[in-house]
Image 1 (cartoon, rainbow, N blue to C red):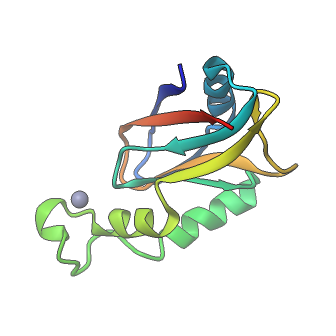
Image 2 (image 1 turned 120 degrees about the horizontal axis):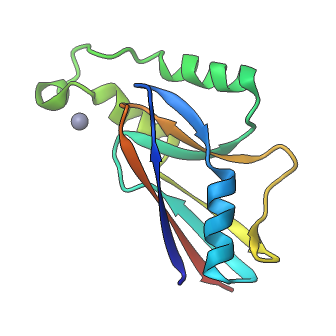
Length: 133
Ligand code: ZN
C-alpha cells in the first residue's frame, strides 16, 4: 500500500514528538525502494517538520511557538480560541516530503521527523504517502 497512516496521542497543549521511527515503519510497509515520501497531518493546529531532536532545541522550539501566547485579539478566537495554533501551523507547515532510498526515508545525520502539537492534547493522524520514482 503506498499510503500508510498512524496515530499519535499528544498529552500537552504544546509539545514536540519525534515520529521518525513510525514514519520509517510506514515507509517500509509501503514496500518502495526508491522514491519520495510525503508525510502530512490532516489537521490545522499541528505541524510536521524536520530538525534535530536535541533537548535544548526542542525547548527552544516550544519557546519560539510560545511567542504567540494563547488568547489575544485574533479574529479566529471568536470560534474556538486557538488562532495562535493555526498561525504557527501555517508558518511551520503541515507536511514535508523526503527522498526514499533503500526502502527508508533518507535523513541527514542529525535530522529527525518531528510532530509539533500546537493545541492539544489530541489524537493526531499522520499520513505517509510513498511515490515510487
Ligand atoms: Zn480553530
